Length: 406
Image (cartoon, rainbow, N blue to C red; front, top):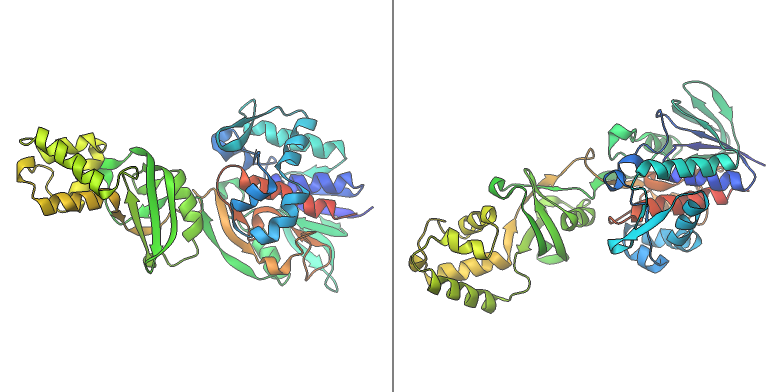
């Protein structure tokens, strides 16, 4: 039996503590907040999309950074195991659109309570309101954990402190400091799954949601991403599923080199759009173009698109020239957007970046530099798209860390 200390009581920490205790180890979990799983409480808009009911292969296809590293964990503890663990300890689950898994109760707090119940069933000791200050090592081996209350000798320590997204939940980068102090290098953290601020002022479009549009990002005329989905105009720019996914793909790139275009009518090609405009123009020759465009776009967006292609919204249809109509078609298919910056960590669903994976054994999550020191969850350079995949990373890496301690 080993003395194991888990630092952090979120999804990965609870998973690691449970599996380490299940192996017969003495486990102490230390959480600096007043309760466990504080970030879990706000996931899925308070409902907690705790995993995705998919195969390991499908799961890995949704990982943005660290997919190769995660391969072993994805197969060793897939989503079906996460669901089985939750149900074993009394949490009824349901699967919704996109294979997203939620508790039947729609209460994220029930997920945390279930994980706590699982941990306590194997005797995990939990200390709340206690902050780890330092990890002491000797001869490249973990020896002691110092907190604001006490010092604890241990054989193994598992760092499961999360990233720095939603810092109000306690994700303030403690694990990054522990990693650096023990010789581990870092990939600079960046906000991921977050909205994009634009240079353009699109206030009249604020609140408009477009269901089936294509957002394309290019860098040096090379396409980085092009996806069909839902986009929302906000007071600062754009958000919604399309944008959140794109942010995960571009957050490590120089944003000044990235151009965005929005295909507002992906079901129509240029010729079909021109024919559609001609029909509208023929029927409504004496009306203002902004009113005619309402049949193609939501009202608040129509004037923005018209101004973008150099046409006053008050122009009468019979005064629109052929070249202006052509520009309108181009704008509808490739409406340009210019990135100012990504929204900050306080809004990011997850942190991209973290402890470099080259320092971690993928089959155990143990450090290659310090014996007995493990990392799991968001503190590592691992992140995925929305849909329950990031929490599954936490559960799978927590399993690998805890289960490898015997």
